[in-house]
Image 1: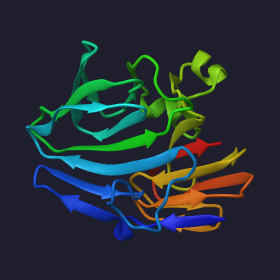
Image 2: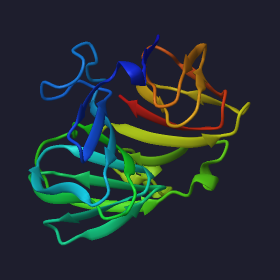
Image 3: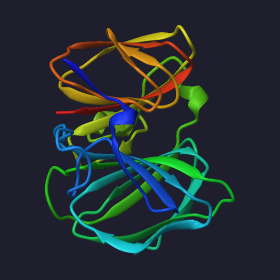
Length: 232
């Protein structure tokens, strides 16, 4: 079963400096029927205005993936990390027993990003932070694993997650198609162009819950980027 969550149907908020659309209901915000998919419980489509952002704030017991689509975001945290994360970069922060961090758009243009939250396998533990560049040309026509809780994926270059999940991405030209085998549930997003997932068409920025499908055919109707989160 493939159940679309069209971008136009997503609940949102506009704080002026931050515009957000929520693929999942979280903390009383979002559509009630858009519940979690396994460990995946937050997928926000965020736009930060220039010279804006979140000041230092705390998290615990959550895996946070930041995927920058356009522009850049500057991260700082209580572990002493400070880094400018550009489009094509992926950040993974394991909050563990507690971490404090900030996120700011220091650019002179809006920054577009996805922020994705997962429940960890176990609570507590030491917090950690990592980032890595995944150039889009290197994922052309194929799904590449960006972050994963699987040790084999990590050994092959994926950022480590303390969760039973893996985030994959591909860039496709119009007419290109990928076949992919699934072993559990998943959530897919067409980042910036129309995409057919088996027989279900998604517009740009639409998402879809995938449950009970063993094989996926991802067919690009337009040139697009695809993000796929697999969960146990």
